[in-house]
Length: 257
Image (cartoon, rainbow, N blue to C red; front, side, top):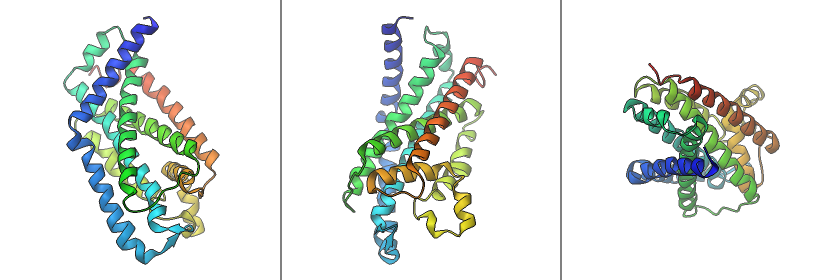
């Protein structure tokens, strides 16, 4: 396959993925906007006025970066897991397998679709947050890098979940019992310094904490964990999961039953 043919194959798959979630924007882009607006109103305005300042910032300013990352995590994951499992269920994935396109391009195409949706939702939530508070991007480069790496990581997680899923119920298990607890316990609504020493150490085992804090550092300039460590962790996890997802696709795991 030439470079041009590879580009055509990749761009076609990516466009298909983008059209898929933009065509049903009422189900994919509107719900996170409504949900995050409720978070801003309830936690930011109503609860935040009683909490006061958190980490040296107004409570609304403190939680906005975490809520943006929460939206990115949920939507990049959901896009890939639903799209790839639907392709398995409808057996349209078999058309890709027999087409002159490599497994690597198939994986990159699906992951890119999840990343685009994650970035779109991040932009929507960020614009909504401006109606409730002021944001100052202290380190724009870290903001973009953190969002991009997080979207890649959870798109890969969604892909792996879709590979192993055998029913539509299976694609909701991880978001319900893994992603939601990790997100809520990842420092979105509080600083880990408020926790007792033991639970601070336990929180450091939560990868979502590093994503939220790295993004918060890019927006506010402060973080509870070393930013370079957070970015390194995101990069390593993304590379490991990428290689694993690629190997699953090459072996045909979950596709040949």
